[in-house]
Amino acid sequence: MFDLLANAIVAGLLLGGFYAAVTVGLSIAFGFLDIVNIAHPGFIMLGAFAAWFANDQWGIDPIVAGVLFTPIFFVAGAIVYRVYHVSFERRGDAGLRGLAFFFGVLFLTEVVLLLLFSADYRGVDMPYLETMIGAGPVAVPLRMVVPFLVSLAMFAVLQLAFNRTFLGRAIRAVSQDQLALRLMAANPVRVKEIAFGIAVATASVAGALLLTIAPIDPSMGRDYIGRVFAIAVLGGLGSLTGTLLAAITLGVAESLTATFYGPSWSPAVAFGALLIALVVRPSGLLGR
Amino acid sequence: MAAGYAATRYVANDYYFYAAYIVLQYVVIATAWNILGGYAGYVNFGSAGFYAVGAYTAAILYQLFRPPLVAMIVGGGIAAGIIGLAAGYLTLRVKGVYFAIATLALAVVLETIVNNWDYVGGTRGIYVLHPHQVAGFANYARLLFFAMLVLAVASVVLARSIERSRLGRGLAAIRDDEQAAESAGVPTLRLKLFAATLSGALMGLAGAPFPYYVSHLEPGSAFSLAIAVNAIAMPMIGGATSWVGPVIGAVLLGGAQQIATVTISSILNLLIVGLLLIGFVIFAPEGIVGLIRRLWR
Image 1 (spheres, rainbow over the protein chains, first blue to last red):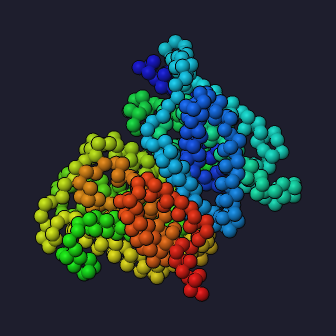
Image 2 (cartoon, each protein chain N blue to C red):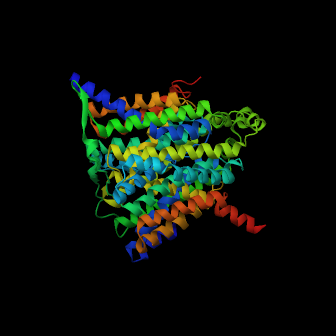
Image 3 (spheres, helix red, strand yellow):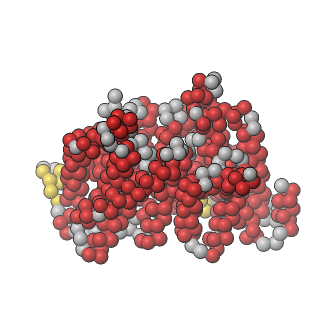
């Protein structure tokens, strides 16, 4: 019983670290830029399939591929933001139609992936991922540990960039006070474009991590919609540390649910967390 | 409606009724979505969830009592209406976008529940077989078609009367500027809750006859991606501010999809719907109705 519990908690911590990587792009878009990018899980699936393709065709390690593809995702994100800005934000029409736009993009990514790769499961077969490491009764495969560590590394880089660089601070300021930003000689649209590019670029890495953990299929993005929003809201919009904390909390909660009630119930955990977050504390764990 | 009933007596090919049923079903769903989305500006991404609540409520009633079709439809509508009220009550007070996010996740959690619920067959699905004979109709498909026709006409009439009532003007005020509406004395929360309940209930009504239509109800078809995207795409493409828009969108898109599924694959079909949705929200934000109005002048 104790062994089971300890294993479930450790697996949950690792899973939570991975969830943080999945959510961070949404935290940037939704928390810093006020853009409700519901298409984010779609970008993650694109990242996962890009990494799978690179692995399948050229034998590149999926995580290396995920990092290599970030510039392409950055540019794609910047373009999506341009379209969004010109079509909705500038017209003051971000609410209804902006949401419908991102919903359309989410939907398109799934349909395009279905057309290209069919509904089969795809996985990667890297021998080193099957190695088990552990202490005492707890044992976990590298398949879970590596994504956790990569995710933490990505968080550290983003945290440093947002806190220490001029551009990073400009991004954090852009949704709060655009006028002040203009007075600092920074163009808010340009700043948001770069920030949204970064947000989408994280999806490339997160997708590669998703592929590393388990086989993927095009409809998987749907399972992540509830999760990423639950984590982003629970973490407090505009707080990366909060996102990390909330992700780990949800990871542990899901892992315990999967261990004691069965894995088919775990999607419901995220929804429960989301509802609680929205009803009880919309400002999040660390919000003001 | 009389013409529709006459058709069930004199049109020979059953295929037309199967196809028309789907188009009419989308008229109900698009109209339902528009009551909350188009009139009040609150986006519901979980239409498939409400539809499935209607379908599965009907299936449960069938398991319990084998009631007449009307009772199954009413039951499905009530259950989905309650879900709409609950979702609205929990999220509409906070911020508009949270309602949208909650509905997105709601469909996933409802599907999880159904997948895990053996009484309704879990992921394997459940057989719901309609009676063989029915008075006044040549076969059951024609009765289902007629029932959906009645629902479609009723929901369009309802939407039209809401649009022209105090309620409709209140919802429009919420859409344009919720704070201003609130301070002008519009009971915004009450109106939003009413619209969320009604919209959910209509989606449930549309889903309730579905088990009889397919005979074998399974989560994949009840929570289908096509319903989730069509519910939004049809009003947005038709024009979301008036009752005509969803009807135009549903008839055009639904009709085109019925023809297209025969000729091209259904997945390619959905690709086209997605592209049309994005194209219209970017280039023709007022939909087809808006385009026609512009040409008129």
